[in-house]
Image 1 (cartoon, rainbow, N blue to C red):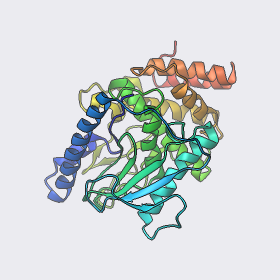
Image 2: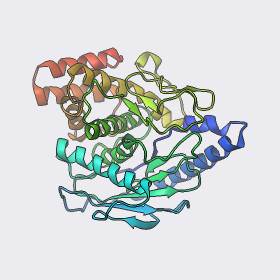
Image 3: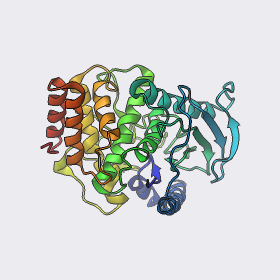
Length: 348
């Protein structure tokens, strides 16, 4: 197993902010980039040493603990909330607790998975991390949330799909263990977006046609004039187009695939392609996206056939096989083939 350091705000956004002439924008972005670079190095060292196999006891109730870093870059920090406690006075603590629970609920009630590792892993989260820290991340064992700078980014516990996204990196870590580079890395990011969106839809009771298909809606601050979220699965490349943040670079199809050495080969950029394929599948099938579409993606992620270095085409082929295995030669398999065809990824 090689756990990686995965953040919700992609490096290309922070790079843009770090070049700003305004020190109020530039300095938080530079600090966040420096922190994230250090954490990635630490995760690589941990990965080389190896990870401990799951040893928890599966339960139908989560075991959540929230810690407070006190605006220092420490984790876990001071324990401030346990599973059975009454709601805290701190809204950030309560949102983190609820988001961990929403993630646990989808995986258990829809897919029969007991927590992130499938074996009852306790769900820990640290809030109020760092000073004006503009990110949230999964560090291989727990969640960490910055408060944002309240200018470009608000509190990172606000969007439940951000919490679900980061925790799904843990699910991927414990299943297909996708390498965090190139197309396998983009699949890693896309799976987190898919299940992050499904966690939000499940919590809100939204069918596929009612969902916004945005990742991080509600996260952007008052100084972002033209932006609604970090990413759009419905229309990749349209989540923001702002003087400060820049232009959303995500492609929706292979025609616009971005070849780059930055961001581990563009993992946060090219994830738009499999994201869009899932959106097309879910809206074609209709109903609740966590049901047929979600079950096909979950079976592919956890079925044991997905190689850690899989590319888009391999993943697409396996989703078609999962659809056939789950539903036979009906509407589902045809919808899967059509979705991948529309984004330019072969399935044969």
